[in-house]
Length: 273
Image 1 (spheres, helix red, strand yellow):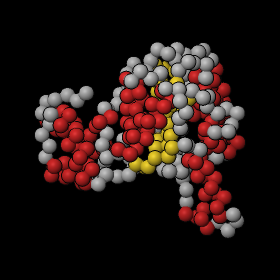
Image 2: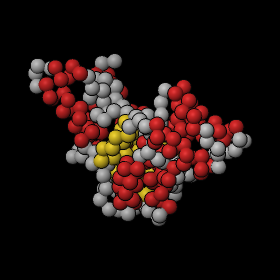
Image 3: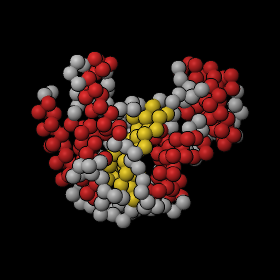
C-alpha cells in the first residue's frame, strides 16, 4: 500500500469514527470505558491489588503518585511505561486508577483500542466537556516500520499540537520499546545528518513527562512475587518447582509468576479473584 493510500485510509477511518461518536457518551457513569471510535462503559476495572505488584516498587510509587495527582485535578504527566513483557506495565496502570477511585478521586480509565488511534481527536473533544479527569490508556503501542503519520499525530496530541489532549486528560502508553517505533543500527551509519533519524524517533518518547523502564526479574524478585501471591491466596509454594516453571517458559516475570499461581490454585480446587 502506498503512502498516499495509507494516509487516505487513515483520514477516512477518522471521519467514520468521528461520525459514529457524534453523540456524547455518559462519561460520569462508569469507572472505565473502552473507546473504539465510540465509548463502551466497563462496570469494573480488573486489576490486582497494588500490594501484589512486587519487584517494581520504584515504578509503582511513581505511577500511583502521578495518577493520584490527576485524580485530584492537579498537574500530572503523560506516562510511557516500556520494557520487558509480563512485568506489570498495564496491570499497574489499571491498579493505580482503581486505587485512586477507591480514595475518592474523580477519575476514569479510558482504554483505546489499537485500531482507534485515528479517532483520538474525537475522544478528546468529548472528554474536554466533562467535569471529570481521565487517563487515556493505549496498551502495547507500536507503529509499523515506515509509518510516519501515526507517530507524528501522537506527538501532536501529547504536546504542542492544535489537537493536543485537554487539561483534564493525560495519556498512559505501554510499549516494549523505549522509542515506541522500530529503530535500526543503520540509523547511526547514515552519512547525512546521522543523528536526525535517531532524534526523530526519540522525539515521540521525549514528549512523555514520565518514561519508566520495566526490566526482567532476577530470580530473587521472581520468588518474592510468588511468595506474595501464595500468602494472599493461601497456597503452598514449592520454590524449586516455581523456578522450573519459569525455565520451561523461558522467562521470569510477574506474568509467569501469576501463571504458576493459577496452576497451584487449580490443583487445590481454589478460585482466584
